[in-house]
View 1 (cartoon, rainbow, N blue to C red):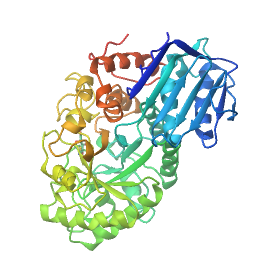
View 2: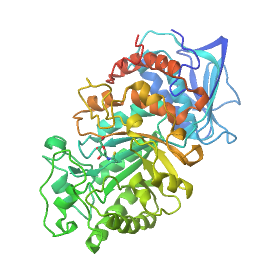
View 3: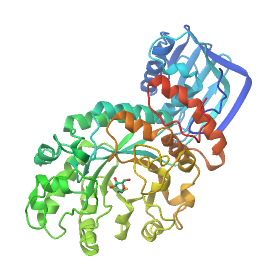
View 4: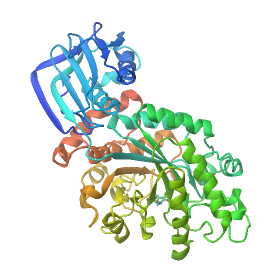
Length: 494
Ligand code: TNX
């Protein structure tokens, strides 16, 4: 069945259908790539070949506009960096991006406008018809993120790549990896080998069921894969709390120098780095230096949450010494909003995660010109149960079904934190109860697309009734991809 031009998640900013026009991709279709678009053109061809069975040769651009039978990719500097234009006429398709990232989003939109079978991995006998008209689209927020907790349960490079490929379908552009916590340390640090040797191996993770870690090479591979899909990896080293796994490996990080026992339970708020020990900062310097060197993106997340075992004075001392280390290694710091108790340097980003409807620290950071990421747990946490009956997940922030994840606005959430203060939104997925990629998918879908639309679409393009119907239309696409999703009662699945 032919899609309507606006039947896309996240909802595009401008949609102008031309009912009389449509274009069908067939065995004679070629892809033409203007200079600078070759990488995205090749990605598009690789997306379309398996299900269509067509050759779809990628050739250098021959002319200025849509030629018969041509899917043409262009760059146009008059468009914003992440902006794109998608024009579908009776004779061809033109995708134009402000940069290759914008073009990549045009490709995701094009993919959603094709029949669901486009996600098949073998040739299908389907007419690959696209609805006619023009979409001009750009994101509301620069940062549209997802977070995965690989500390409580480790996920392999292959699993994270797979998750990433399901995220980019919704124009997510940041993947925050929660790499360290009380129950495990998941990134090799060459100057501190005991971290992964003692806290990344068998028996680590919640219930000892989530062992594993990324070597520096694994992490580099993951980061490069993300970059190839215009996703920036945001590594998090959670400090000064959530550090039991680090203290198991380096006992000098405790007050008395005695290693604590490894922990596999889900309690929080009991471990702390020691703010008045120089060993602490030597350790943090080593870790941040290596993580920064491995990470091409601009951000380094230093955690800062739930430091109940750190006094307020020690917390301040610690954060004030660590923030300059992030800058020293050329990165901008992100911290959970507890960090905003400290006077933050320009460029530091505060990530709001709790359920309250006001937060003095976050408002103060915004008043000082700092940017804020919105991840309120009662809306954006993918690890909350959908309903009381959901087997996976937690419920400390309540249950979060799809309508709840969708029907809120980040600019209305906290007094003093309006549109201009927002860098964007992020959907965190904590893994205390997760044991597999299927579990990850079941919690993320279909709520992640809700948060993606909150982050991308203009307020006036958002509508719950429209969204739930577009989600229902996405179900077959997940089925064909073999992606698990929760069949929420909020959505009129076909
Ligand atoms: C709170 S959110 C935490 C995490 C837990 C999560 C579970 C945040 C910054 N800290 O340690 O995993 O709740 O939902």
